[in-house]
Image (cartoon, rainbow, N blue to C red; front, side):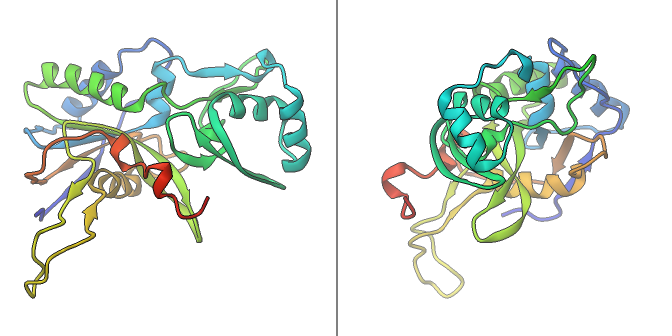
Length: 255
């Protein structure tokens, strides 16, 4: 399906702040790096710069912990102000033990701390700034794609990625929170394998696979390369958003 794929980090993006023209910043970075995107290329963008541009930064000093937050803070040994913010972004608390708070995010992701993070978030004047996930990552991806398509003159796919821990495995890997202009999930059920057997269960998490590859080029620390251009792709499946990657609650075998 796809061969000769390249993952190229875009240099020179710099700090992003609320209200910045992120599409313009990324367009400039693509041009400065000498890339010539074509239809079917995919731009993977770290959630952090999406959230920063959308003004999703919160000062913990503005938060008032609820009794539930105070209770969970005592159990998890986490900051009660942070816990309150986690609860406000979550639909359900799944696990609360010392140093760990796993929730179901309001958008359906099962993750630690509702994805709220303070790494690579600038705080000034004693403020304790943290960053929330986008309000709607698929909508953010679609809006960014529309602007980049207009600027570049070709239809890119866009993925908004974030690093997730995984059940029963150590370490984090990038996954797709939002996607536009590509199939986030490719259903191959009904196709034949190499020996003619019918595929019965195979659904390919295409957007997650691209996000994971892009994560290697982005890095997880101070690299400062929050966007990666993926080239050499080919697919035939219809586009669908990243929301389809979330397994329905009725299919959750571990509740």
